[in-house]
Length: 324
Image (cartoon, rainbow, N blue to C red; front, side, top):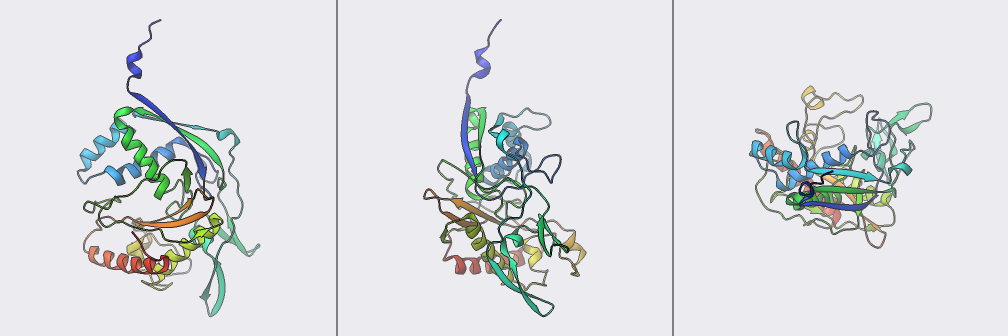
């Protein structure tokens, strides 16, 4: 039998041990079940590849992206394998509440959990239990698995940089922009270089800034609570709790029970430019950070969009002690 070594020429393979830092809500065919999937990891890599290497020539970007990740017409040059999954099971359980913030409603003051604030949509209030209950499984913080990449060497830098950016600034699964699904690997982080013009999608540009001077904490709960509260305070600095007009410039749709929200805000689509993330440090401490990565917002709201973001950023810098 012939063996064609040429087909393996210039093929590289890298494997990383991954640790889940904050609870990861990721499902498959049943969205309520917790499950690690290669398709979801590849999707996250696509997002961060676009953030690092994308351009507003969408046809060119689509062509370059499909060369690496594949398309309906082209086979992927990247194969992802997950190992150690046999010991991983999703659990449905309440998370620690973390920091509690006093808030007012109908003339009464009561505390809200900042973790539940960030997990809005993953849990719902049960009258019979008189508390919020998580309705989706998660994979617990501290869980470890390995991910192996096999790829053509020509795309090594693109793939590894996208993965390191994902690990450094983003996350996997639902509510990853709210700090859930943060992961860590034993490798150097990806340093973002602020340069370039705004794109029509979320991408690195000269407008990017990182709020990473938050305190080190003993647990992921405390670290996520700190940045979650900072984000909430910054949002409230632009518009109070029952206001939606300026808030919609940060993200929509907006769902709030019992509130009269305009249809264009309830049904509109606009992803927020803020990425909450928790790092696990070498000393086993945890530190939160917030990445601001905007895009070229549509007219005629572009000026107002950046006015709102600038006000939020000023508040975040004040709370965190600065940004870079």
